[in-house]
Length: 342
Image (cartoon, rainbow, N blue to C red; front, top):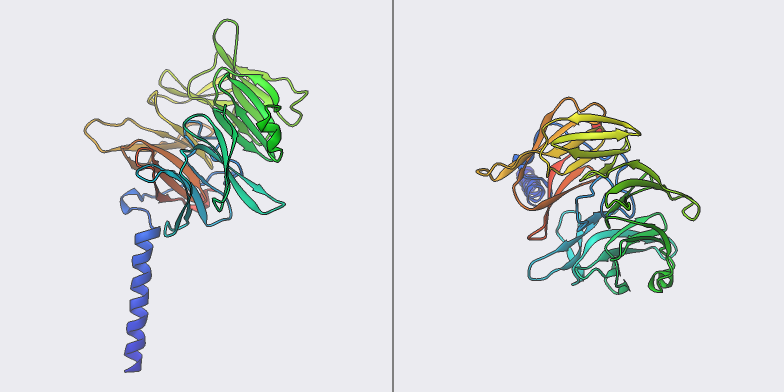
């Protein structure tokens, strides 16, 4: 009799664990297909907008090795929320609107900060307990935190650098000027190469690269002129971009077509040994495909996923693919990535 009771308790606990897994942790089964990928360098501190995803708004950010993330949610109670790994526990830190969220860990105090821009182009920071939500700058369009440095662009399209631990320097407007830019969006690669669009007297713009290890003495190099739309710094080449329906890469004066017939509005991501891009959204379908190709030669096309046809952003973190619904402010972990492709 005792044996049957133990068996019954064991089965009950097992079933409860399975139910909890599928309720809170498992991605929807219709997203699961073979294959997968991991971002080569994992999740870097400061990369609320990962450097290989210039077309995201940075409304979700996660940092190794913590089992929680930060997310901006819309709806009736908008704001930045701190979420547990399974989405079971949720704490609202601030009710401000937030985009381009970046993280910074104060190693002296052990306190984590979320730097973000609100809808009125004001730069804020809030600590991980929500006890301090501080306005830093009322003129900011885009940010990146790289190491201990804050990079940001202003409404007059100037690019600045400041020591993130010297908040008074940023507030007083005494940050160091780096460059005049043609677009507020910029990116970085390997923590010291800063990419941005630089204007020219003719009205066109070029992609410049600034080596920021010694920012006060460095001079930018023009690596692509004129600048393409939807460009990305790239591991194997200087830039990855779409040109006339083709996915192209440049290295110096060399231009390579990696894949033909890609939608002009396709968002491009890369992780591990693959490049991912969105396929055509069919009018009579509620889904659209996400394809992958080899990073080096553009071969071995494979449809990796079928995604809901909603306004969304994709994020790659810690072995999972996340889909963020930009209208509802909901985050879904939709796909587990295979570790053998690291």
